[in-house]
Image 1: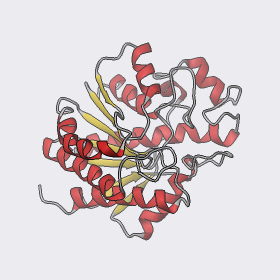
Image 2: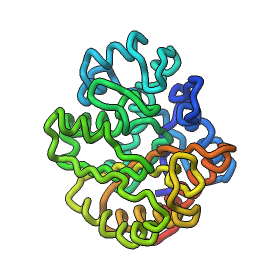
Image 3: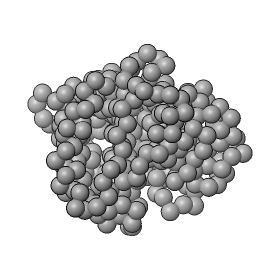
Length: 280
């Protein structure tokens, strides 16, 4: 590999009046990564179709959201949010395909997925791009088993709900179980074993959340250095085990937003170091 493919389009970005930076964050992180001169290649994603999104959500819910007739995960009816959603799902889906094709890694600079359930959105999440991606790849015959390692600070309740409603047993879903700074050492020590548990998966979807940072107002158990070590472990173990990884952003609510961008910058630095600079 010469570059880390990053699946980004300005159409992924929207600007609802919200305390969450996630709708605007794709543009910010990509600009930051370019400024850092990371070896990344920006690739235009293919937006997800209504039919693909409906593989993970009730069709009536999908139609209602895209027509702005139903309330989105930001508790509003904004047209720019609705227009961005096929692109955010499509970014992760396109990056997942790239990771499967190159056998290593690709990135989707997206957030706002794991609280979206089968026919509802909340917590700044409207469509569950994690499940849309997994379901689409499964329907296309590109995967048999998928792993979701959700390292957002908060439990992926929407992901779990969709799996229950649809009776899905071919996805291994691991979400956050630690909230206390006293758990940091245990989390880091056991993470390699957790990543190895995805050995039988054709693809690992890794949510590299920024909100587990100890100073995040909605998080609070890992330092900046521990978050960087988390990323290094995930990438190094997955690479050693031959598990393709598609990774995306997740929560991060510190102000100023530069603190969140630093965490996401460290994730990309770990990715570049592991896949472009390390032998093997």
